[in-house]
Amino acid sequence: MGVPPKAGRPGKPAGKSVRRSLDNARQGKAATLKPPNKQRGADRKALAGVTPQWTPEEVEECFRRFQAATAVPKGELLHQNPYTLLVAVVLSAQATDAGVNKATPALFAAAPTPEKMVALGEDKVRDLIKTIGLFRTKAKNVIALSQKLITEHGGDVPRSRDALEALPGVGRKTANVVLNMAFGEPTIAVDTHIFRVGNRTGLAPGKTPFDVEQKLLEVVPDAYKLHAHHWLILHGRYVCLARRPLCERCLIADLCKWPGKTVAA
Ligand code: SF4
Image 1 (cartoon, helix red, strand yellow):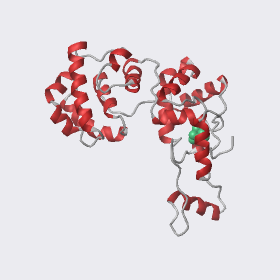
Image 2 (cartoon, helix red, strand yellow):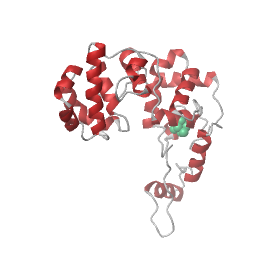
Image 3 (cartoon, helix red, strand yellow):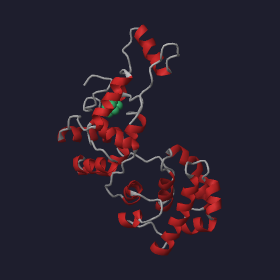
Image 4 (tube, protein in one colour):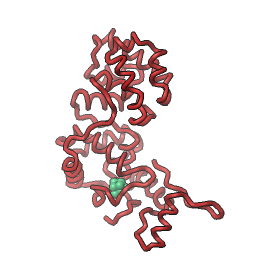
């Protein structure tokens, strides 16, 4: 979970966010941050699963609002086809989408298919993705999974969780993203943002990403499952931030059960 900003220690300058809160207080404005220890405690409580459960009506209302705000949310990883989507998601492990998007246009221009990727070779792939974390291992995996797609799937990306998870570098989260975005399956891939939002809000508490995924599959109404992954990821990435959630701009603030939220219920 996110680490809240540190308060300034005596003799040391306070952090930017703490200075901003103090400035607000001096000017009589409402503080925009809870005390850091309170926020940390709230995140600990949420992770311990003590946040109140949402009613089915609240869950429905949450997704109704997400849909009203963005009818068809989009993922942010650049890709051209199911194969380049798969490669982009593999490259995004422990990296940001923005970082991956800086490297992939050149990679996909050179190799938009498994056959062309294998022909490009591991050294060139490694060179093209060297700005992405873990690039050596990822280059190996991209070549190995491309080879496997050619020999076992006729060069196509399989529409099967087991077949996807059998590919080098592909785990449950990657398989879920590909099944959802390439094949329109109602899967929900749980990344760091969705894990935080699920626990923090009380919508889908769980100790592991798998637990949160199972809870989301249980509580999200079928009509919203296809886009739930992107609504939640965008909410976590741009609003319910780890260090400083923007509760004052949150669409679901009144539904959220997080004791650390910075607006009244
Ligand atoms: S009110 Fe919104 S932004 Fe704040 S913690 Fe809850 S979900 Fe996150």
